[in-house]
Image (cartoon, rainbow, N blue to C red; front, side, top):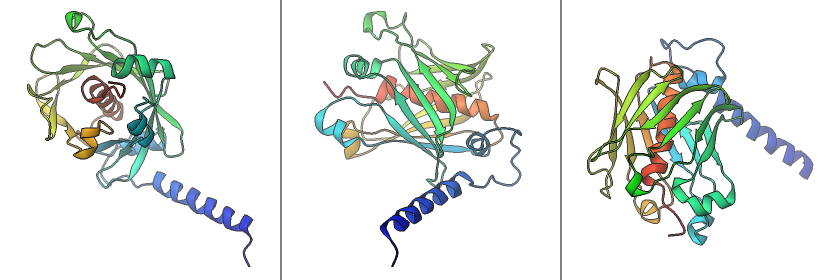
Length: 252
């Protein structure tokens, strides 16, 4: 008869094996990926689509107590290959709400750090909106900046620019005029400096979960051959867009 200790060990080994198998998802043939990248970034280098799903925090919904956001990053088959977790202190989350500064660490499935998002506090007062535009630094590996996402002032619709570590513009992200209309998907176009569309960020309508303000789901598309760090910059922009326009204050 198998002892409880052996059962526990077998379950742990099965979970570890499943995690390793998930981390070893194959890179499609014909896609060139730079050598020396961590497995999670190497896999991102082969993708043309990433789906980002916010974790449903039942306690946050029931109690209204703002907690650190968590996200799953998946491929188009809904296989998770990265995990994102916010690191913000309790008081900042409760008093600053969606406007809060935060650090978001993105890891692979083995919790190895790959990307860090650092959003400083910027006042969101409506009468000073054009003076305090939102921005976020993106680092990979953590501590090494690869670029910045900056909000651009426009009177009618959301707009962002993505700069590399040298301050050169790589992309412009432009939303719709009526981007806050409920009950439908919301599309942000991704354009290169020549104003040619190269991808999309889609905020999916979440039904009942959306009404509760509990979770947000996104899909981002880009060319498979795009530089992996440029893909990381575009992924980081999704989180700034989420907090700017779709994150709700649970205390309101």
